[in-house]
Image (cartoon, one colour):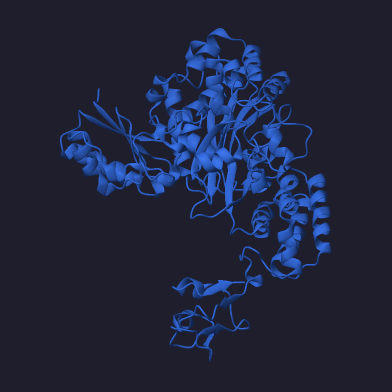
Length: 602
């Protein structure tokens, strides 16, 4: 038994910031100082507060250190472990008050969160099945196999009100019931870990931090619906998640929790991995199954739905990672426990990947019904650098933008739909006053256009034509009547595309036209980008009375577009500079160079 544990984030974000080197150095220093019997170094999954990584937590006191590097390892051991003193310079600093926070749970980032799907992430070593078992792991599976019928399991899931966390929000228990009722001697249980939304990493973090929760849930689902084989479809760009899933599957098989005659109950079920090549369309359930079958990932018309005819033509249950991560706790704690969180129609919690113009980037898990304001201002720490909150893109490239005046909107399936957004898989990107909403819509449409599988014309051609219209707006060559044509085309794509990718692709365009039409009109009528983002509509000018005539901007200009005038500002010794708009390439080098803020965007 160790007197101290030092937990270090081993998720992708912290790993990219050298947390592996930190772990190696901590272990080396423990051995060097002879502390092997006193200190255990534990690699965990993501703690959530990615902006502060790499994160280290020292137990038993729970001291919370942030942005720790390998060079800090010796000091942590010498000062904290040996002398019992805090390393003040590494303590987390709250963005609003500037005060040090000693424990992770005391931070503003965590106070309004409720971790259910993420409960073990950052708590256990995901590569050690014993640590998962020590926190009630596989107890739900034992309960199901020894005391419950398949229908009783489904009834509990139904009663919990859990809805699919992958985007559509379809009732999970109902999907399980359809699959159970389908006729077939072979049935499949699949997990969708093909997370492709820009800025989203919820499912990746669960697989990296708590893979056994997903394995346990899939096995429970298989028992409930009559499943015989499971597949985890995960994109190959998630190497850490893939490796930890492989380790977890091997461990579960070794412990008799997967495979033939699980726990001696006569129930058999096994799970294999299938790696995706990174096609966004494979997040659509039928395209995912087509890919598992070894074919090009393209969606299939529905009906028939996968519950009756899915993978290899057999009844198939498919949920995403976060949906499954809730199942073991629902079984152990009961449907009423889960249903007590959230709202009447949106039960439980939801994980969001909080990014963009926000202080605390990272993963947050909040009860459904929490307002967008609480997420952005209280949990996220607000918009940095004194900028104003302008909008939040929710639901990834398929979602919509919520403007500042709707920041008090409750985040749940119904209320987001009313304002033209969606929960989606959980991407939440914050934008400040310097964001151009036309450019944002263009960015997301460019993504979905590029990721279209090309099978159906409305998506393949429609998104291309829509993108061209948006591009003309940002170039200043569009006409006012083009806005109505864009709305018409958006509606056509939504009504006629084959799968969810095409049907939801126009959402960013429709929501920005709904709330930020004045920006579109400024681009068209005034040939001006109000945010100063669209290069073709931006002009740089030098305020002559502010210019001291140093000429540094001219020396930095790659286009030789800056020249000296004859005007000498009052109190200045040298003639002011000016910009030739015909030669300016709008690179912005002059703005970055000028120390006197004499160059502005117009």
